[in-house]
Image (cartoon, rainbow, N blue to C red; front, side, top):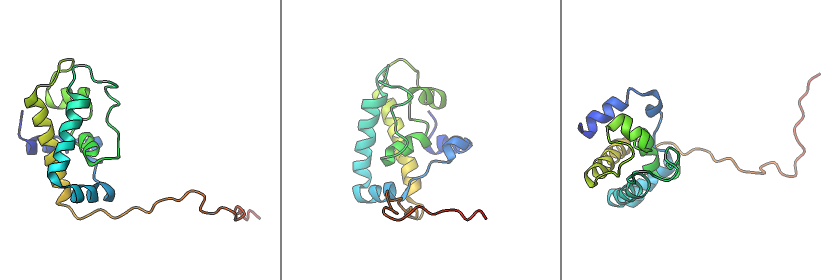
Amino acid sequence: MASPEAILQRLSASPFRQRFHLGRVEYDYCLKKGEEMISSHATDFIRQRLSPAEPVNDGKQTPMRGHPVFIAQHATATCCRGCISKWHGIPHHQEMTQEEQARVVELILCWLRLEMQKPAPKMKKQKTRGQNKGAPPEQLNLL
């Protein structure tokens, strides 16, 4: 397997992979928890969700948000066994070795380190439900 930097360079040519970046919540989570804890989470996620020969819900087991590692998995094509096979040459339908799991985790951490070197993303304004409760709906003046 090539170096994590070389793999990230190759992945950067994919428009789909390019669109993934940490949001402010995930960025702050990484700052708060630190690399050691994030590495532990990544190791657990890969071992539990991806290392089996036939993972449960393969192709759908990695959420698109909710944890920095999930975002990194999509950015690094380590989100399902199909992507891992296609992009990293780790065979489908056989359990991942400890070495393969460690390489995947290192790639995820490399991507996260690069994201954390960027300025903190701006906080998105959250939509509130029922913001205009009690107020009459606005009407369009069509005349």
